[in-house]
Length: 157
Image 1 (tube, helix red, strand yellow):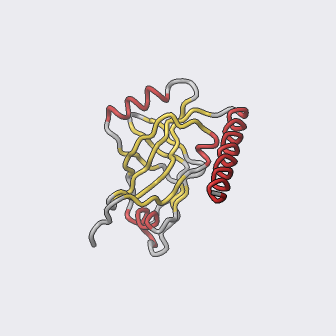
Image 2 (cartoon, rainbow, N blue to C red):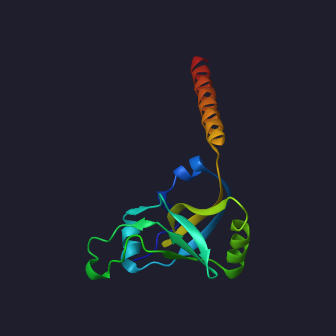
Image 3 (tube, rainbow, N blue to C red):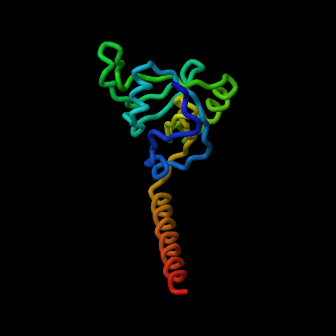
């Protein structure tokens, strides 16, 4: 079976943009078992409540839920087991240096298939305060009003 070309987004974590400022995004591979890949291809994964951390020179993602594959029987793994992310050593050192600073964390923002391989996009994030969230909501509402006004004006012409 030939691999599909291009990118197909499987799961997104939209709440990350509400709760954090995403400073930088990094694409990385993920070490999975066969039944987990089949389950991801079926869209049965969840990134909410997940985070990543650097442990012993490796990056691990915690709290990512991949539902057991229905035809997987004994080969299914624990849905919440820690999964290793695949990055080069110099990328891991760079990430570790950034995360050591106060207030930064690693959060998976989306999982997608790129040329048939599962990839995870990690965001280096800084937490938002309540007033920052209010500002973001106000900006989004004002942008929506502007777009609405432009559409009504274009229809009138």
